[in-house]
Amino acid sequence: MHALCRDMWLAHGVPPTQTVRVGLPNMVVQNVVKKNEYRDSVMLMKASEALRSAQGVLNAALMMGTEANKGLLRNGGLLTEDGESAAANDLILAVQAADEQTLQQALRQAEELLASRGHSAGATAFRLLDSAIRAMPDANLAIISIPGKFAGREARQALEQGLHVFLFSDHVPLQEEIELKTLAQRRGLLVMGPGCGTAIINHVGLGFANVVRPGPIGIVAASGTGLQEVCVLIHRRGSGISQAIGVGGRDLSDDVGGMTTLQGLQALDADEETRVIVLLSKPPSPQTAEKVLRKATQCRKPVVVNFLGMESKQSRPHLVFTRTLEDAALQAVALLGDASHVLDEPTAIEGDLEQKVALEVTRFAPQQRYVRGLFSGGTLCYESMLVLRDDVGDVYSNAPLQPSLKLHDVGVSQAHTLIDMGTEDFTQGRAHPMIDPSLRQARILQEAGDPEVAVLLLDVVLGYGSHPDPAGALAGAISEARARVSKRGGNLSVVAEVCGTDQDPQNLALQEERLRQAGALVVPSNAQAARLAGALVRRIALQKGGVA
Amino acid sequence: MTGEISGLLGARLKAINVGLPLFADALRQQGIEVLEVDWQPPAGGDTDLLALLDRLNQTEDDEGDSG
Figure 1 (cartoon, rainbow over the protein chains, first blue to last red):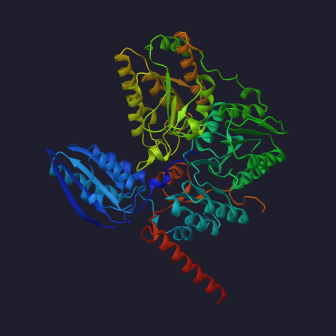
Figure 2: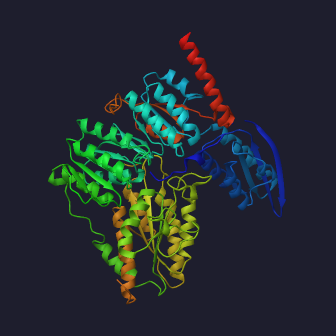
């Protein structure tokens, strides 16, 4: 999966130490440093939001004291000398308020929020994995989402005690991944990850997972939002998922050699519920691709393969190669042989959308010509670049298709640019954009300020773990961005896909409607969204008499 | 190497969550029994010290096994 900067959801536990205040005109700023106190970034984000909403609080942030976070606090005018002295294992409480009384109230509230520790009411928390396993001796799965440099140690303990592992953590050393997977194979256990964002095991979603119908299609995937997209598109076509096994983004490297992928293929081939297998990854190394494809060919069931951007020139028995995630989902459903599931090929522009597009195109100002994409899903960003480059040519990115297209400054887009906002560039000191929409909100307005931007391309990912109302969180920024561009005589087309289902906690239809009300063109897949963005840019060029 | 996976697919999931509580909450919403570990960095976050402690524990275990 895309690099969810999981290491920034990390750091460390102990009592308040020093307090310093900085007096500025009409405001007070104070930092409280709690030595060796660790809280995850999701909990800290929620606590920070709660503090900021209090009357009289001008700004507030709770962050681990890493250098990157201290930089963010410094830039926001929230860092005092005490905060400067904090180490990466320390927690900083930073509050800026209109007066001293409000500030002290906010700090008390922060202490109360921290005391709750983010656990559900009534949930018992153990200090050590060993103690939890003793309390649940028949546990069969460990879900691990702690800083990468510590995650391998917990995963090893879980494996040694016979538990399968879902390893969400990123930045686990490569050698440790190989050792964990070797140990797992020896014991007949599965390690999903490291860097595994999502899985569906026995119809239960793990990590960031959509709610999909049980069904006959099994998936093995090295790409998190790729897996989510294929799952939801299969669900929307009336079919469902037997198992969706995430393997982690490095599994198909030559170093790891596809260990978990091979296990997954074998398990799905033996699984009675599974009739069709889907294999998803960004392009693997040729050697590992060959090894995995040979295994897939040996499966008794058909295997739909999507190695984004890597097309096979050779045909192999049982294997169907596809270009987009949507194609993979459609092919998998079609291979079930139930005609009721097989619908028409997707089209980029259909029905009343065609009229809306025609209208949009007439409103652009002469200099508007570029597409800018802001993604929470790394694989969705990657797929969009593949689709778009056919229509618009070079696409720049912080995670580009080729090194020459890498942005010099991730904070500044150039020409056609798609940004993966789930990378470390954007997750230092904060939660992933699927949970925390604030950076994307700001970037939407930033892109709207560029007079050459014509089209904004967005993904919205639903499911367990994601923001409770992700479309609603972006809607305000979309409306504002469109209004600003309109005010200066132009038009901003916003194209979006919602990766979700009618059964997701956020509800697909509601989320799509929020985007439409904000003026977005909503299409039913990521590939279609990219195609529509490309079509808009082409039409603009045609209107100007340029190159189609 | 067999590559087989035993005791997971088709089995009733019983999980232990180490880290983000939101993942434990999601499992509970799906009716899955889950215990939570309120993880804090061991050895005060000092990975060198932790590696040393782990080696010492391993040595003690080995001596215990042989003894």
